[in-house]
Length: 106
Image 1 (cartoon, helix red, strand yellow):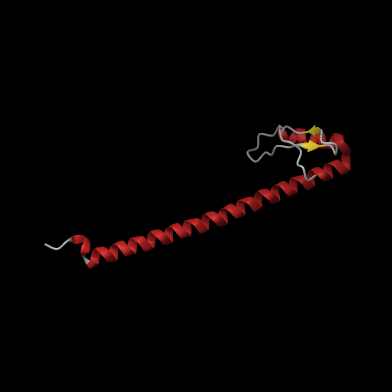
Image 2 (cartoon, rainbow, N blue to C red; image 1 turned 90 degrees about the horizontal axis):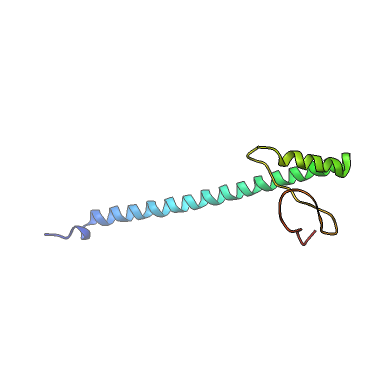
């Protein structure tokens, strides 16, 4: 009796399975990479827009208006709510509930 593992049909089926598995893995990696980059760009754009909005709030109403705007945003129940940390030039925290250290490059 012939060994079924040595048959041409088995080798062809295994080769096809391997090719599809590799192709599917490559497609999944590409889709993941594209989605990851798109999500990061969206988050960066959202943070930049929010920063511009808060700068405008500060320019029109001063520090008090900025504090009110941040407090209002932090009390929001929105799932896309952000956390804030505003620092003075000397490094002390002015406003915000986000517990982080002041970035060194600012």
